Image 1 (spheres, helix red, strand yellow):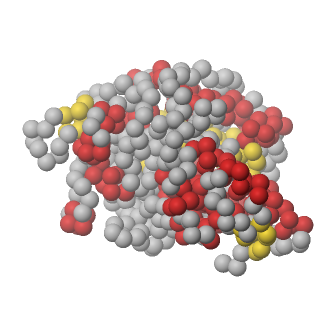
Image 2 (tube, one colour):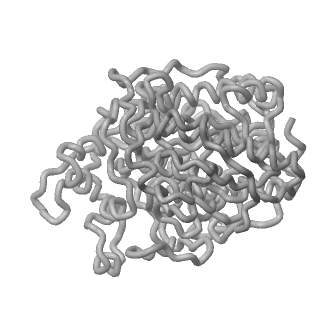
Image 3 (cartoon, one colour):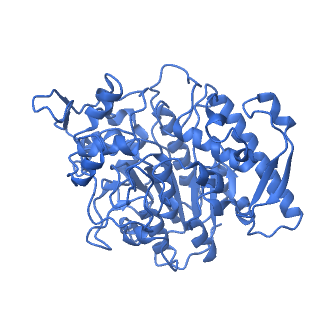
Length: 514
């Protein structure tokens, strides 16, 4: 059972699930038909195929999204073109262009013929029925933006630490060392509150260096083995992170919604998590947040905020962009679920704490701080971000919240490809290499992943994570301090993509000295 927080709020457990690479309009935009108060789409929205040609053909927004195979552009430079309508250059950046949101079709078409149609279509509500239920039954926020106009990893870092420590893309050095910033996990721990991370593959939260400390290793739980039991037994901690399957296989399809993974699987996953929470004796003390790390290159019509956004820590991003973290990313879905929320609520922009404040991923640690009465903010960004505890408007918890949600609709007709890795999947492998010692070999970082298939990667990271856990257990038995981080030294030079080598690798435990 979660410890009692000292708070005026009825919430004792906050659950966070962050899915992958979809914009608000793409997932929820057409739910305006369910609730006209939602700032969604009508079909009148459009993008030209060429922003520089006044006579260019326009692509109008449609509702034909089903199973998305290509992965649209979502690098920092691709997003610049999507938001501002022209390709990034130093000269363009100096113009301080307004965010017209008119470059999605152009950028997509320049990547692959026909991709403009993909990014300019969203899902009909009946194709994402689990979200349709949740939007109708609880609250949707239609002004929630990604923290950074960049790819997955920087945005995921903001969710629990309100900064990416200067990252605008994969930084292999920091992947190995672990990102050093303080997280909301530590703030909770310092205040005597509990947290738990329920993972299906080695957890992405281990990108944070401090979560690799011996004292936190017991906070990680296998989702399939423990989540439903902890819900049933009323043992969920104060802060719960649920991680998904980031890899897509024929046997276990990916359920993170990252293209080309079937959104059907993501809907099943959300349904499973919700129904476990709903059946828990802790239900009347829970606030469940579902959002997406970034928009994944899909169109959204709401201009991204570019004024009055503070840098979290003054760190400037790497060349050639030298990003100052002074504007947000594209709008993403955000659904807030609790029996303390009125049916059909829509949360628009925040009322503070500053005139320019917005809802973005840093709103999560900011709200956790408020609900659990924590001492201090993590960065200037969560100090600025809007908080969403105001959506808990009821004086008593509802008794009519649905026990089950609609059955999802299968959208993919083919099996998982099990082919090459996405950028984020490569990052997960590289992080695993930091856990098992392979980051010290000359195959790190790119040679390690260049020939890996999805199946190779799954075997590699599971093996690496287990060896890390075994090393942590040995270090504890040897009397290592709880504050220490275990590093593993590899004595074998066998390439990690060789499946027969896993059982032959020998490791020794040392304590990291950096």
